[in-house]
Length: 181
Image 1 (tube, rainbow, N blue to C red):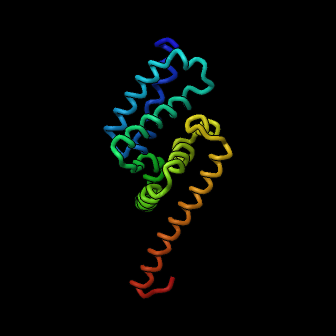
Image 2: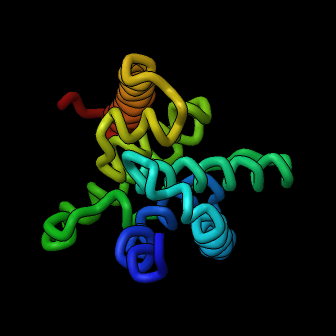
């Protein structure tokens, strides 16, 4: 892979790699550093990239491994999803939608922290980044069936935790106001 092709195929992945690294590292500056180091690794491996089916999936895999190495080095595991990943343009048009979306996104970010690391990565890649199952499989060294099972379990767990939290708030509000809705 020559310099021009690297610039066209690998460098445009910067934002996706950054979001993924940020979700794993919970630190924007560290995520930026991680992406730069991933680009260096990708550059050093550029002769092998031509043989890959999906250079993007490979870049995600390198990013994941690099971030996990950083996490292991600091001995803490924490995921925080930035608000920019959770909102769409239309969510911000209406103030009521903005508040509801912000509250729901904040709750979901906190609940995602409770998922196992593997499920967090799968949910992030599929639901936030929009990757196909095959691409996730390549990035995480997993079969498509394993990804589907883990994604289903993660979504079910998130749904249960979210509904439990929301229902708790609803019941608490009923008691405080003394009203039945």
